[in-house]
Length: 537
Image (cartoon, rainbow, N blue to C red; front, side):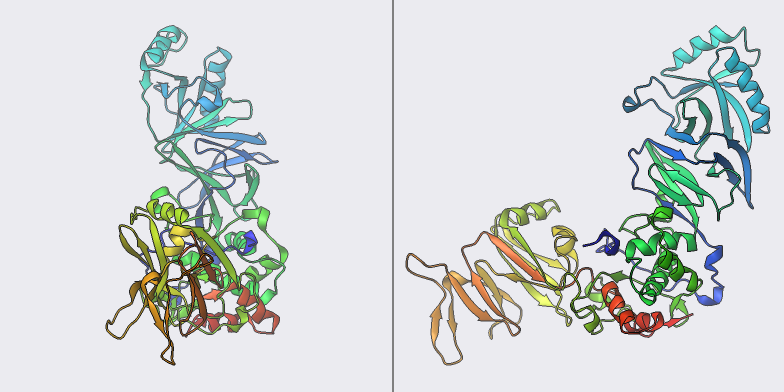
């Protein structure tokens, strides 16, 4: 599957408590005025440090009622890191510092004194907090080292000095040569842009990727979190071409742009505990920043600016997937919630798409290990069979029999355990190995039977024992399940999942949208087809 077409997957999809329609159009949503914080995870090389690049240098800003410049850095590269020493950097630094008892109101004031101290071979640098500057000295590995240094320099420095102890909030900014330009607390949030640029024209490179807007940081214990603070519409320009190929028809791209806009607005604060709204992976929406932008994708975003999909006047949560396999799904068959605009619809437009038919082969050992990795212990695997299907043909209850018990996987749990990219959808059947679930006249719920001890009675009354005999016996029977003629064997150690489509099946099929656009449907018609009873406002 092309990475650009990778579906949006919520890793915690089973446990997700969903809230729908909390934004109304009457609130006057202007997406041009919306800014979001995107947590960057790729392609960062460390959670302790990161390199930023700008051909024009950098501007450091704070924000209150508006952005206010703190100072410029005339360097094309800066190195942002945690306030600790790191073995991987091969430098000897520590989290103890010395603070001078002086307060400065601007960077220009503190810079002059810092340069004076550096000229006297004292490792001084500015500390910024709560809109004021102070001077800090050194990075010592212990309090005693810092106290010894105070004794050493007290004849040179006439100010009172004190030792600053370790704190897990501090972040350093160094220049390319490793010299400390600034240290600040994460509570004093700094926004970094390319020099003399505003949020609409600024482009900053983070490792290998470029991003519009600002780069800011958060710190949680020993983790440095890099965040892109960006206008929502510019964010979408970096999302749409990663979720749908920029070469696809413009109406399909417009449908994707509206879906992505809705999705972002309804998921703001998804990662609030880490200090940002959305991440840049499939957990939220794949976001590639400036590097990913394509002409047609940007056009689709621009021509749908402020367009939102609504249900009864409220902005909906627009889930989408790669391809449906011919029919989309009802929300309650993926989660437990009934959502009126996420209804299963016939989707002939997805037929013929990649992954219309796929196969996954798993051994008993692989299945056992996958279950145990998710704290499900049922011994050696004996049999696997779908027990219940939805109207669309998706498995909503999968029975797994082991030597120590039976376990049922419901809805998307089978994909979560066996792998979203391996078990591409829940629209599958399993080639039975050694048993089957049947619904007999004497019991109301499905019951597992052993094929070694079962006789099948045909419509003519002929009895066929499933237990085989002879040297060439492969213990196979063929049964009709009401849909397909299946071959069931009791000897193989593998299980074959044969399925259709890719994704959870909720909402818009991306390949279906492509086909609809090719057949002349507008983006409004595409969205209304996949999201029942909705309007575009």
